[in-house]
Image (cartoon, rainbow, N blue to C red; front, side, top):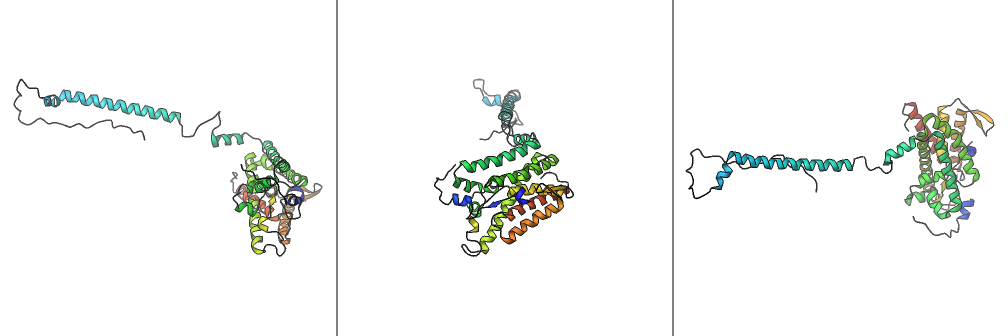
Length: 331
């Protein structure tokens, strides 16, 4: 069934792609804070003495008498206080104006506002839109392999320990959009179309997109773990592995598609599926067959199809199924 619906191909030294890349000739590509003033101010208070002081001579003017006058002192105090209040109101109005011009939620350009804009855009997509978008994305990357520099595509659209340790972490996802030939992409896209449409209609297009990406990530992680084990247990150039497993690349949407297929099987174990398009088989038996076949590939050391990547997608499907059973529909 995997040969029909999903495959992640491991490129070895005898494959067409490796022979094509054995002599690369293309060059590498690179791509003062505002504060609110106090509303009141403290002034020095002058108390009148208990005994009246003698009046000053008529020829001299004592300025202290002006300050000692309660009415005049109150006039100055109220005037200064009013200025302080007005200044405070002015500052507050300026701050309020600036806050209105710079909202906390960020800027909006033409009705689009960051995360909320992406969320609204995704919510507006239908199930068919997401399925068609994934099909077109896989087809687009497949065409890129025919147009772009092959060394660039190997470094950015294939998963391997060498790519991962070199910092090309995006290959954990981009490798799930790459396919080696027509048969490879057709088999994966058939499974994505039929089972992906079912998942999207039951749980929404956003759920399908997240499941696809999670399956891609799970398949890549399991692939890396498996090849790290092979690299540690088998010396380079000896034993069954002529080529260093850390440099053996893989590609294919099998991890993502396997997560979608197996989740649909886990949710509908009594449904009838058609093996090889003709033989009716209960979904539960088909799921057992798919998982068992991938385990057999690992134990036999299949160097063409990665059973570990398929099992990574199966693990994601199991996690998603458990969350759905608990009532957590958001993946």
